[in-house]
Structure formats: structure tokens, C-alpha cells
Length: 478
Image (cartoon, rainbow, N blue to C red):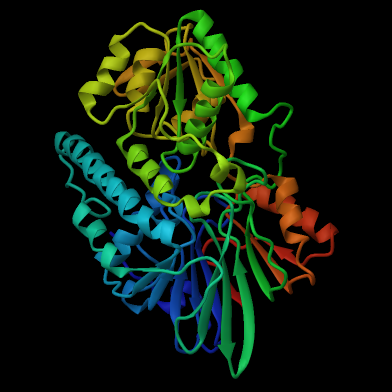
């Protein structure tokens, strides 16, 4: 259960050391970002994210925090993706009473994202408990409820990009734009001990350069220690053609077959980027087909409003557009289940954008149930698919899948556009870390699958960096 606590001996924390940084998640895995920073008088977290992926990863969410939530003074959230913030309601449920610091856009996103996550927790637990009842097993509590998620809002505190804020006598923080999603932040920590300052940087999730809507990732010029993501540290994103052209090719080929283009999409950032590009194509291309474009995600509809509310975070190109990139003819936003079901009842070609991005939940599963068997259709992946998810299983070439109590033949075309990733690739990551004017004393590589982080560490060592890959539960003595 979540109220299970671990003793200092179990955690192997050396409390005689004044500064400890412990990786509780996103260590040799991509999800579950959570790093605990302990000073002589201050104890806080960088992110409190949910593990996402297959059953083994999801099970980690139920193990309990490896620290006492009551002892945490505050939390710094890098951005609004669930693998970075999704356990905040559980933290509150188990006694956390401090403040939560984030950029203004992230503060707007967190109640939306966490409210949706709580709703999913409650519904999934209801389904699981019906199964447990049939098997004579004890019912399970949800990780947290919508009531727990609602308790987050009064704890939120905004810090705009570039402004330094002294949180305690030992800790000053400053956010820089990470270029990953709207409001995403690189965290600069200025930590005081014995009148000496140590600077620790957490990259959060870094974005690509030259992508639509938001600004490029910020360069950081100096730090003593860096915690850096490595999601795509072993590959280069496909850039043989602009992503807009590759998307148009998928639209046209599916339209000519008379099928539906089903796009599993993350509600935050990926959906808005798709809408932005679709609005451009409809304006620029006379050969764009006359078809309906469905945004079939109540969560994405709410998130898109946050994008509209923060034009100050757009890049120069997006700010210069005279049209409304998230509102255009042919776009139909479906909020109710009845509206969603009508999409599958129609045989007309269409573009359907629905969550969840890895096909683990949400309306996309219903569209797959009705469309996977049909060779006229295309399932187009535009984001990361964690091991064990339905999305990864489809990408890996499954000819049939088990879902929603059915075994479904996979006859639809399965496609992927890798360049849509909101994460920096290997070259982007190198570009970012090499911008430091002096090499940090140590670079800790997190937020990546183990083999990927290991290979990127070797690459950095060859370039003269002291790079290490911590395991979950490792304590980094700074």
C-alpha cells in the first residue's frame, strides 16, 4: 500500500552527509521521474511522477514511497506529463502538506492532468475490483481519488521562466525553457551549505530544436552537477522529410483507400502540434482532402485551451500567424461518449485524434476495436511507446492483439513518424550538454531505458564528461 514507509537503513542513506540526492524513479527506465534532494535543513522533490508501461512498471506505483511524504518540504515540478507529476495526489494522500512550484502554464495544466489521472484511477480500480470479487480476492483501493487530486490546486505556486526564487535559506531555484511541452522547465538549483554554493541542474525533458509552437530548449552555461534525460540517447529522429509532409502522405494514402487515419496522441503537446500542422495544411494545400478531423479527447480539448491562454510562450513563427491554429474548418471536437461512438458508426474517411498516446486507455481503444481489422485504415503513431503497452506491441508487428475482452486481427496499416517526438534525440542531447562552458563535475543520466542510458554515457565519456547512470534507489552524494 502507499502508506508503506522505508527505514533509512533500507534506503542506505548516509544522513551524516549534508547533501543527498536520491533517484526514486526514471532511473534506467523512462517513466516515474522523482528525485529527492536532502540538505541539512531542507528536504524536497524534483518531480513526483507515475511509472507507466507494462504491468511490472505499473506495479511500482503501488509499492509505496521510499520516503515519508510528511517530511517533504516542497516539490518542484518540471512539467505536466503524468510520468513527472502523476503521483502528486498520492503524495498529498499520504501526508505531504508543502507547496508545489512550477511555471505558470504548468500550474494551469496540473489540475486538468491530475483530475483526469484520478478519474482513470477510480475507473480502473472499479474494473479491477469486479475481477477480484469474482476470484474471491480482497478489493483494492485506487492510488488516489479525484478528491485527492483536487487538494493539489491550493498548493500550487507559479515561478515564471528566468526569475530566481529563494525557497528556503538553503535553496534558490530558477526555471529555464526546456522546449519539450508548453511550460516545461529546466531546473537550476542553487544550494547553500557552509556559505558555499553548489549548482545542480535538472534538465527535465528536453525538446527538439525548430519544432512548431514553442521555443527551443534553453542552453545552460554552468553547473557543478547535471541530471540529464536520455529518452532517445541512442537514436536520431527521422528527418528525411519535414514531419508535415510525412503526415500529409499518411492522410492521402488512407483517404484514397477510403479508410480512417487513427492517431493515438498524447493530450498534452502532441495533439496541439498535430492541430497546428493540420491547420497549416488546410490553408496551404489545395489538394488537402475534404474530410472531417475529429479531436476525440475531452482531456486534449481542455489542454488546448491552456495553449490558447499562453500565447506568450509561442515561438516567433506561431506568434506571427494571423489565423487561429487550434480552431479551423473541418475540426470537430467530441466531448461526449455518444459523439465518439458516431465516428465509428460512419464509413466515411476521417482523421481521428484520440488518447491515450500509448493506447493503454481512453477512446483510442474503442476506435482500434472497430478499426484494427480493416485494411483500409491506418494507425499512425507519433510518440514514444513504452515497452509492454499496446502501442509498442502494435509497432513491434503483432498480427493480433488481445484487448477489451476480444482477440483482434491486425490488418490496418501500422505506421510511425519518429520526428514528432517532443524529446531531444542523441544529437540534440549532445548539443545541449556541450553548450556548458565548463564541463560539470558529474553528469547523471536518467529518464532512459537502461541500455540507452549506458550507451549515451559511453558517448559522453569519450567526449571527456564524467557520466554515470544511477539505479533506482541510488543515493548520489554531492
